[in-house]
Amino acid sequence: MFFVKILTAIKHSIMKKLNTLFILIIAFLLVSCNSDDDNSTTSNTSINLTSIKKDYYINDAFSHSSNYSFEENKLIKIEHSYGRFEELFYENDLVSNILKYDASNNLEWTNTYTYDNAKRLIQKNSISSSSNPSANQEKEITYTDNSNIQALFTLSSTQTTNENITLNPENLIIENKLLNDEEQIMSEKHYEYINNNLTRFEIKDPNENTLLEATFEYLDMEASDFYNYNIFTYGPEWKNNYALDTQFGLGIETYQISKNYISSYYRYDYDINISRTVTFDYEFDSNDNIVEQIENMIESDGDTYKTVTTYNYE
Image (cartoon, rainbow, N blue to C red; front, side):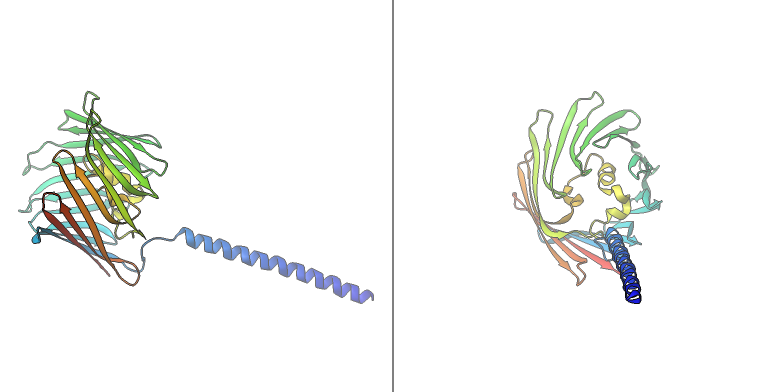
């Protein structure tokens, strides 16, 4: 009987240790799985984007083309069929210089970029060359807090314009006020989002009159990093860095910062009384990498525009 009790005690001790070991193994597996999930990405990391080609058509007639070349998914050159081209250079995985040439291979502009420790753009200088006697431009950017950006644009060291940018909790621009050197509002841009997709955009004049408005619809499919290749150009803060790289705000194709692939948008320009209806068609490969995008645009004055964008990988 005494030996039975000893054997029972040993059995219970072994079972307890096995249970503890089993729990530790499960915990280890869960941590490993979570670590893998944290490193997930929307792109297929086994391939690289090598080039993007855009063919432009106006009223069904070919207009011109642009070819974008990439190395390690970073944009390094843009060549246009009418001769102009741009070269991009990087430092610490962020674009540091962009050189712009005319159709005769003459350097016209040198753009230089400076970032803070958080990889946010804090300065952009545009210097004209001797073959392009234009005024130099400088943009100084200050991040006053997590919801506000101040950008001072100086033209030829004299004329200044200030951008007062407001961000939402997702770090997306929701308002951009453009002020002259006397701090008077010149225009206001307003942005609305749903699930990190831009759904509405509006421009107003100093009297709060709407000059332009646009609404956007999206596919139920998250865009890949190859589609949003500015991720590799401007780094983790690419959306705001890209916006600040333009002269004032996001420019015309504001939907480029959205999370999903765009399916359509409608835009009305009150200044010229013309509306624009745009639809998009896509082709994807078996791994859901984008292969082609066709953008069809119809304006209310009867003109039609089409852009065919093709993506090449290796």
